Image (cartoon, rainbow, N blue to C red):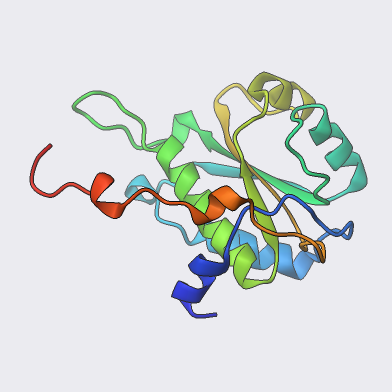
Length: 172
């Protein structure tokens, strides 16, 4: 798919068909995330794939924003494997995880898979439910699946602030 068309047509899907994704499709999405750039290429991302009825039921205990998606990927970062900025100690790994999530979201769209990026989840409940180690921090949840026949973007999807309000040249 043409990149401009892909980003124009992608929207947050909140209504899915019930079928789980095939492993070949999951592999393509994960491979895109694996190719995403990370600080010094440390690759601190950890992706938890949830693609069974049992794992999705567990997910529903951690968030109300699951939209009955048949598949989900929880993107985390390993703080112990992060590049650290020397000036202030800031970690690149949370940003790295977000870049990985974006790559996977766009790859899913390219495969005809709808996604919704979810931040509304209980990270501690997620940690307990899926036995996530303390040094691994959940960042973003991509719920995904094939969009239902009546899936459509929310009206807000088509509203953007003027670009001159979000882009600044030279100085604030």
